[in-house]
Length: 361
Image (cartoon, rainbow, N blue to C red; front, side, top):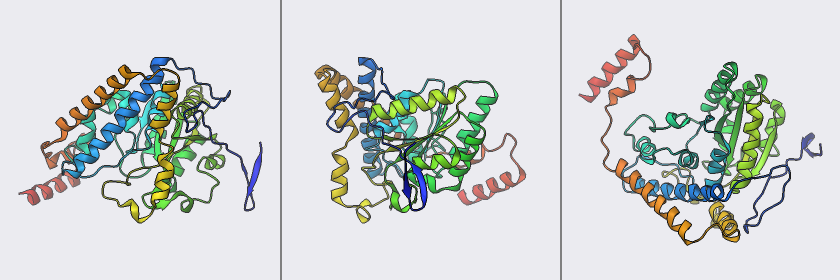
């Protein structure tokens, strides 16, 4: 394996896997073949467009006072959709909070997703039915849950893959390192998908780590590490598909770094102009994942006016369903906080409930 020196440390070269150039032309790569039919290729585009429409509608709803907070995934649609499309229906996804594309691909009701951001329910509804764990706001803690589920599936002889979705900032959390180590030691069928969107809130990735890349961290854990163009839906699809198939065969975990960019603020409470400039934003806008993929479909004759109308109609129907579900939705009963912790409430939990009741009254 070719290596370079980083200081006094030899590290392997990890070339960025890219199957689609920014101009929409294909990059031949025998290692990562993509054999998708016309309908499947169009479905990827459809899911990304719907994802972006829902994302914008959620931002609008927050600005209108209907949501408490929202974390946008604009610019990261290819990484999320490509990952979800690469999985089997029985595989599980353990998300952070920017996986809208995966939920669109799996058919999760958008109204069920919005209630969490409004605070009308403790978590988004409709996820577990589509083999997705709940949204995780605490950074990186769910990677341990993902590895535990994967280890359990392996012990049961259930040939599935589990994907833990995190951002670059999560790789600075201790939970993630524990999860990676456990997954490697126990050969858990788990894929760690890191959407490296260049910032952990306001901290750029080069200030988060001295590693040559996030994917290089895999070397220390004894698992494969792969870097792919996260704005290339085909590259993300191909890389995750290979990693998931390896996991199902008993080959253990893989760390995938999807290099992408967060076009919006970290959340709707953030002001990104304080830590990044317009030139950087313009540079990444030219690498927009939807625009790039649209060029490919147009070149291949797969994106005619009828397809465009169908996609637009689905996007409009999805945003309408989202708005209907969230606008002026009722506030939850705060006592529901205590209803799903233990089958039999503990004395301490009952005492806390009484304190809350007194405060509410």
